Image (cartoon, rainbow, N blue to C red):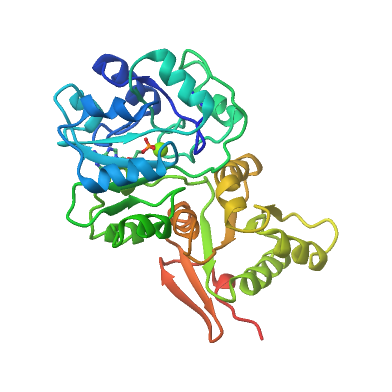
Length: 342
Ligand code: AMP
Ligand code: MG
């Protein structure tokens, strides 16, 4: 188990099929969800692939070490279990000094998915790893909290136009600046008819136990505030996911002795990315009846955090614009979430 700059990873020798099988067993990870191989030096990718094209080389040069995973053609030494039988392999070179030192000491690529039980939010600190993994693994290397907090960006370099299969710490804008045109896998917006190219993106992931609803749009903060006040009047035990500004406003408006569990990520997208998983796990500790959250725009890190937040909410999303509240996706919303007060 090792800290990286993104989230904690559950590691094993990536060229040893038996060791890798244990990762799948411990996480309860579906066998069709391939793993990322982590390396400590650029040259370590060479034996893993049959060839790197110009895009792959440009990405490695610009963003490694860092929170970017590239999908490249696999070589025969990569076990089938790592790639889930695909003819490509995902490779990343983390920038976290502890992760890099561990990979160097191991002397082999380390297969390392996020160190959570499949379906739960990823772990971004040693306590959250311990919660999921105690008794199941050899040990935890505690490197403190992860700075970025969302998983690496996964880019397929084998498609004609490089394609983002999972948004993450390296933003779309950063990739476009280096490569020119970049596509985003259209399946990422939650349309159940589309099949994501990164197999793992199809799973319900990142989900807290309580049902979660999300307000997006310009007036998300206003509508969220109003909804929480109504929930409190109805005696509901609500969880609220918001930023510091909204939290302060809510605490002023709610009467003393209120029971709302208001968890703030701080201020701005980097704070949201850093704390999102921890907060989702914290909701499970306080067991609200439902969680109401607010979204941010999709610029920069917004694309990655909104991808995770929407999944966490099971795509139960309301759009709050000047005209009022409309359903963006999902169904069966509690009535009180749909009321647009003057
Ligand atoms: P995690 O291990 O939790 O960080 O998830 C790794 C992500 O990378 C999952 O969404 C996988 O489906 C995706 N992935 C790994 N290898 C490949 C590959 N060869 N092609 C496409 N996606 C991949
Ligand atoms: Mg994961």
